[in-house]
Amino acid sequence: MSHLSVETIARLVDEQPSALDNAHLDACAPCRAELDAMRADVAALAGLGDIAPPAAAWSQIESRLEAEGLLTSRLHIAPARSRSFVVLSRAAAIALFFLGGTVVGRSMKSDAPQVAQVAQVAQSPSPSPSPSPNPDARTDAGVHAPAATPSQSTPVRLAASGDTRSQQSAAAPRSTQRNTSTTATDSGDPALRALRDAEDKYFSALSKYSEKAGTVTNDPTARLAALEGIVLTTRAALAQAPTDPVINGYHLTALAQRDAMLKQIRATPATSW
Amino acid sequence: MTDQDCIRRAQDGDERAIRELYDRHAPRVFAVVRRLAGDDALAEDWAQEAWVRAIRALPRFRGDAQFSTWIHRIAVNSALHGKRWRDRRTSKEIALPVTHRETDQQATRTDEPMLRLTLQRALDRLPEGMRQIVVLHDVQGHTHDEIGALLGIAAGTSKSQLFKARAHLRRILRPETESLNEEEVCHI
Image 1 (cartoon, rainbow over the protein chains, first blue to last red):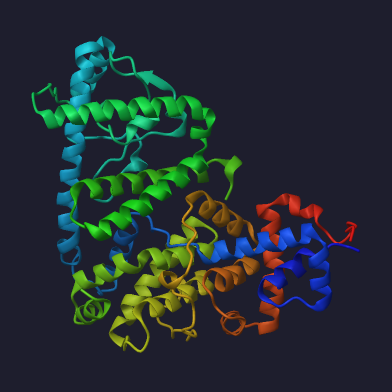
Image 2 (tube, chains in turn red, purple; image 1 turned 90 degrees about the vertical axis):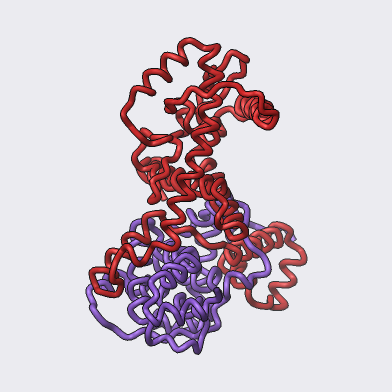
């Protein structure tokens, strides 16, 4: 007897099997497994969730609405949300700026080449707290996302503590470490020390993971999936705390990185969608 | 602020309320349009069309259906009409049955990002006609009668195309499925 056709199995996802189909399924484990797998696929399709539109989508819609006279002014449409969004984004950028400053300050103490690099960047006229070399990784609100790419995951030594860190892995939480012009110094603040200790542990663990994961972390699709997960998570968090500057900052960064990753994948012929 | 409050204010010309409606519903609109389009750039155009069209028609929204249902109709229509729709300055909305599955009412969600991406990529690789039917039936939850009305085909055609599309999708997702064909002897 032949196996059931794939089309027949697809039909049996929705319809009751005939007596003949049942008899076959009772006796044929591969066809039963295929039916179960097809049911799982269909269930997964039904569970596909929302997709965040590109960050710039609203501004394009806004322009068209203005052109049609459906909106009177760009300043009218956005102020309540966008203005506060910008403020919050700036607050998030400042927080990231501060974090990055502490890292750079520590690095400058113990790593001469790193100091030279930071000093060179510090002379840059750019006023942005975390300028990205990748223009695509910039959001509407002006917050720059770290420009890490999968190819940047070569571990580099950043500090005298000897921990080897992945540029890619370190990019998000320490987006300003190569760019800031501040020279943060150690303070006696116990909270700050605790934060640094936690950062050290985090990056140490991340470094070990990066070494073990090997090339897996360079898979753009895996990175895109991870970024999509972050976008979903931060969006859910924003629903709970819409004015939280830290969550806003992470959300914007994740959105920008995801969009940049999508563009990178689309531009790669080998990973045609 | 509820959707009803937002809609009322938006209908009164409150542009902040319009933005609020967009923020609330844009991910759902983009999801359906993106999956029907099978392409990011096209999806962005179609989503933009859907929103412009929705905001243009907002003063006529009477609240007979939920706003999410209403905007979903517009999004699906925009996607199905595609580029042809863009050339029109005014047009009537095609009435869609309102029985599509609301995403937030789904019992289970595909939360695993890798699985979501894998499925999305597989959907993108389906031929356009198959993709439309799979998206409308298996993702959005439309019935074959509704799909038939939307696409101008018989419900039976929608059904048979769905089974072919699922089989095609299965082969994309798991190429080894090819080995399970009726030519192979099943030892039972």
